Image (tube, rainbow, N blue to C red):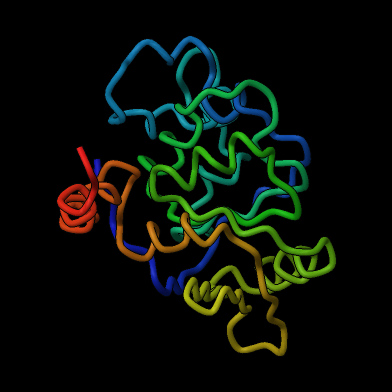
Length: 198
């Protein structure tokens, strides 16, 4: 399944300054029965967004109309815990295209890259600047330039480079998953086969 290509994203952001957010908090285990990657956004942070009677928790940031955008800014060690792909699916399905943190769990990070969500890892000091900017003005925009591997706080002096695997970077830019990438190499594969001895 291919995804939207990701080159440059400029958007306001939703702040979630909670450390050690694990995958069970992102998408509780009871919602993992579905096998398709659709509908998981409805249950993103389910137990933080809703009470047991399904009433809304007004104090949770995703229920606060002050904050919006396609970028989620999380605290340190985001996506720890079990390796469930559904956590990345839920973030994508909700509408986020980028998650920013000062540290990601490796498996969660790779799951995001595989389905079209860009995990941008920044220094703790830069993350603090982001939170400060958003809380000063909820309309503050971040600009994520994937080709340049640069994240910036718009209308400020703050920007920082980030790292990404070169293969995953090219897939994100082209909107490819691993199968799409192989399909894009079809002509080269056939050429290689034609020149290879039986």
